[in-house]
Amino acid sequence: MKIIGRIFTFIIIVGLIIGAYLTFARNTTFNGPQKHLFIRPGGGDPALQVTQQLATGKIIDNVKVFEFLAPKMKAYHNLTPGRLTVPKGTSVYGLIKILKANHQDSVHFTIKRVRTREGLAAMMGKNLMTDSASTYMYLSSNDSLRQFGVDTFTLNTLLIPGTYNLKWEYTTGQVLTIFAAAKKAFWERNNRVARAAALGLTPDQATTLASIVEDETMKDSEKDTIASVYLNRLRAGMALGADPTIKYALRNFELKRIVNQDLKVQSPYNTYINKGLPPGPICTPDSVTIEAVLNAPKTDYMYFVAKPDFGGYHNFSKDYTTHLQLAQQFHDALDKKNIK
Image (cartoon, rainbow, N blue to C red; front, top):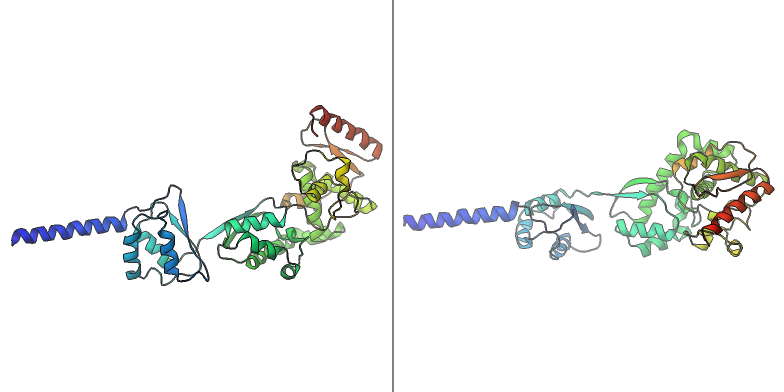
């Protein structure tokens, strides 16, 4: 009897050890630093959503152990829609703790250079619960955008470059609400609204001008001078003649050389045939560029053209004759490099 008792005790101990190992040992099956579990609103029972995702075998190995323990440990009682992070090496017990805590992690949504509604919709569809198609429809509706003080042309004025902490389950409207608040805060700082008004611009117009400057040069040191050229043209009633707006009108952002035929494109963004600013930004300008516009010096420059050494800087001129001479030097350099 003693032998049987010892064997029974041994079996129990072994069982406890195995159970503890299966419960507390590192149990993830993926190679990256983390995976996510998604609880979708309207997606049905949260417990079923979790087990269906685990059933793929791409998150943890011992799914059966988890399925046995999770209900007993009330893993699903606090779950609400959102995204939960499962770090590499998480145990079954660790996963249950994550679910019980229901700690919804933030999505670090970074805006750098956004040009189009399609591009913004794709970014949101990739990083948030919403899909890109429905997001694009929302972004294409002036009725939807009106509450944020923008329309389909001025949508990009909402986008102040930076990183936003969003919840994965946020709707498009909730995201735009956050963007609108960030825009308001940005323009309320450093007397920016008044400084734009001193130039004869609204904040949205200043952003639109800054978007052109942003695409004209990567050199921060000459952004304010380029802005001064465009401001001088606006005051003189001239067409802006901004090449980046032609690229935008053509939706060809990699265009290396603009030819006369390109200048005929029928678009409200064509600043060669339409006077004044385009109807909205052609990209999301950096805050440095917006500041360059607001700090634009008073100059007599009416023209500028890239230097022929392709160093990224520009030659500025006050009269058209000088400009044509400098422009010819640049065009000759393009021909020499066979850039069409």
